[in-house]
Length: 284
Image (cartoon, rainbow, N blue to C red; front, side, top):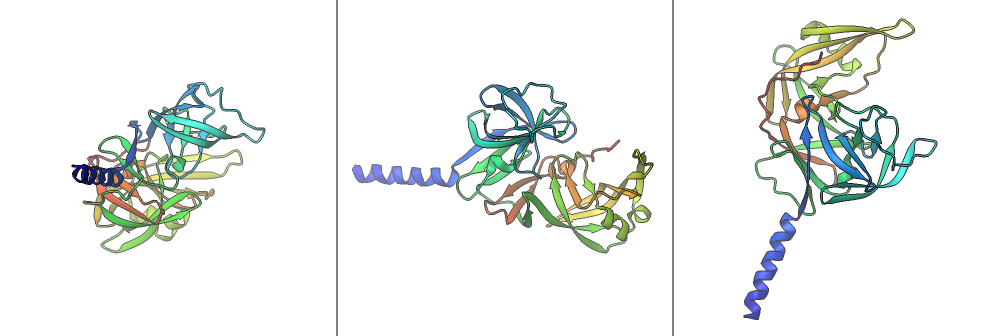
């Protein structure tokens, strides 16, 4: 009897260790931003936008809710904060002050929530999953990632003209509501202004009279791993000011997959989500 019970307990413990995980619920705004309801320092209830391109957290000057219990230094930094999300607690979170966030957000929070662990962004169930053990990767395809200065980059093939594929690296940027945003160098080198079908543009000028033109176009095909997306919304800049130094893969494309990132930040695993074939977000 003892031996049988011991075997059952061991099997149960083994199953638990394989599936040991925590979940964090989120909601998605109409602008494709992920919002997490948090309680900071047991006092401040804040809606924070998840920003995959940063590690720490920040508070927006345009926040709708009070953040009186996050104490900042003269350098606008606050260390050793506690963030609670339901039953999940993360300690020693650093906040910066006066950083703009997305729509409906009081601030931002990054991948500090998942430090040292594998995690999943599940757009089908509106939740993050944090794994203590290796996650189940059945049905997912592997994508190598470059992890640099707390940001994730992936390679994707761009079909701009004809059937020629142009590989480029993209920063995963969940704060940008649109699809693709190309760097100034890529846009100029590939002559996107001439080769893409343009759907809209705006001209802006700074106080010195220098202009920047934002253009929205349609990329015929984008290939990420084995997945191909058609007629992808793509933005780029032309003009005197050249500040877009990297390519963005924005929230409208991120939501089209469920993502699993390994603990070493060397591989991502993707699977099409329920949003894969949804119409693309329109940048006004």
